[in-house]
Length: 315
Image 1 (cartoon, one colour):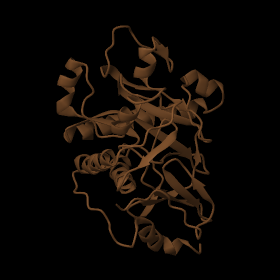
Image 2 (cartoon, one colour):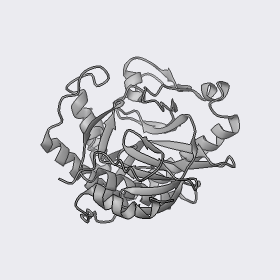
Image 3 (cartoon, helix red, strand yellow):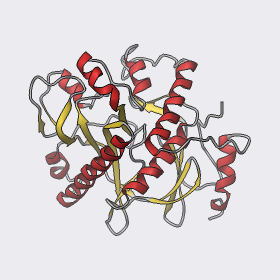
Image 4 (spheres, one colour):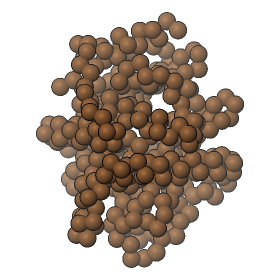
């Protein structure tokens, strides 16, 4: 299997390793962002999935194009299926999560907190009697702190965000408005593809002139939860999880076997890795309406990326 678990390229300057992406800052103010095949959840790397980085980059590309009329994004160019050249931004210290359903498996999800008996969270008041995976009356924003050092994201309220100076009131108004509009567009287009966009996260940054710009990725199987629309009614009625197009596939497998925040993660079986790879490929095709074809040029994925990024080696 051609898997890109690491993408360190010594000829490129100013490397920064994220959970999934390798980043390199160029002297001209742009950034090279390489999506690896690493799968991250519960603040750790679980495994690597073939073609995942390709799928993420090109799915985000579809969505950046489909939403560029709503807000500006960081994209400059795509020199490789796994790579985007983007504007280097000062990332805002708040991760904007929009949720349309009472769902999730992470410690900050509405469903996890609701099951613990919490009814007031993120500045929201939820009623008693809601069921797992129930649609909310309208999408809500559940912001969290942006853990740059690999630590846990923590729930925030709008008052926390503005009161503690994480964002100005104007910045919060802008990013929350963008987020809800992006989510509405995402749900609209997903519905046409037979999908439900359940929830998603957005990251925003500021350009040198203060303009707020959408960064990172948008509506990918990593940043979003998708359900297959025609599976929802029966699953909700039976109290089961609808069929999904996202990394909940492996997250759910892990949660069934350990406490992922405290215990050692059991090895992910090879058949589950390949099954998950198929989920990502199918997700790309369903979301975009285009066939997925792996790029097999080069002796490896990293070799292909190095060849495509050579023009940036001496900048």
